[in-house]
Amino acid sequence: MAVSEGDVRRALAGVRYPGFTRDIVSFGSVKDVAVDGDTVTVRIELGPSDPAVAATIEREAKAAVAATGARAITVSVTSAGVARPARPGAAPGALDAELLPGVTHAIAVASGKGGVGKSTVAVNLAVAMAQQGARVGLMDADIYGPSIPLMMGVDERPTVDPTGRSILPFTRWGIRFMSLGFLVDKDAAVIWRGPMVMKAVSQLLSDVAWGELDVLVVDMPPGTGDVQLTLSQKVRLSGAVIVTTPQDVALADAIKGVAMFRKVGVPILGIVENMSFFHCPHCGNRSDVFGHGGGRREASRLEVPFLGEIPLDAAIREGGDEGRPVVERDPSATYATAFRSVGEQVLAALGATDGGDSAPQSGAGVFGWFKRRT
Image (cartoon, rainbow, N blue to C red; front, side, top):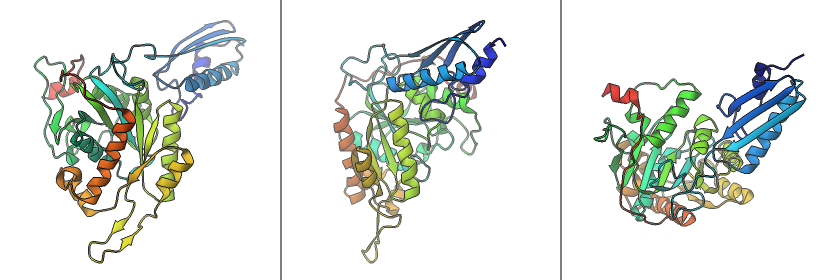
């Protein structure tokens, strides 16, 4: 029986992108399929990634196509952007020069599951690094549950630059930040399938005038899905910070997060144990509400840095609710010191240094639906 293009594409839909739940067809990685009798040629294009990922996909794609009955199979896997030059003076893990040319490093703050305080860590980490002299941006990539607007104390629409080509980020507490939460109605639910989510992430990267930054902190959604893959395909992340709490259920998912980033070639900058312990303000006793030491233990086992323990404290929650991060609200407190320590270690790992003068970038196609509404 002759092999059809449809047969081949259905077979390739069974090949998952390593570390993710979706397949290479739904992610748009399969760029071309040619069938001539029992000869099949497939072209697959990936974003910047570990060569091991390309090798795995090539092997599994060949096996999937062979199962259709094809005899002669050619699978070509390329990584888009790998050969493009990096920003002059940038570190090996720096962003692609064609995307966000003024940004030296991008890092992901991620977690395997929700509810571990990932956004709280991202916000305070960004502000702490800015306090240490770095030029820092904060991008909220948690499309379904953006919390940066509340945590940064801004409740308004952003503006577009005079050219009408770029959205201007907000600036507060020494950092530039942008979130989808500024572009949709406050109480609206974002009910989007994967392709829309991937497009939104791409536009937050390309259509915002981030300008010259030493570090762009990306607050990721929990899990290992569309946003994580889109980001790893669009930019060469300099590293990832994994946030967990001490209990086993959070650690199990954090381990998956480490594995996912490793599979797409992103260095792990370290693990942060949030809500590590609680000091009673009345009796002074310490209570390990969620257990203790799990983050340090797993960091040692996985051979990644342990960046520190963040205590469970009402002041941290109050800072987030008030829109004033605790490292700014109460810089002398022990929890603020803990965040600053994490920031110092991240900057040291990146080797982040000052660059040139600020020069916002411009881009095309900036959130057309947002511009129509304004």
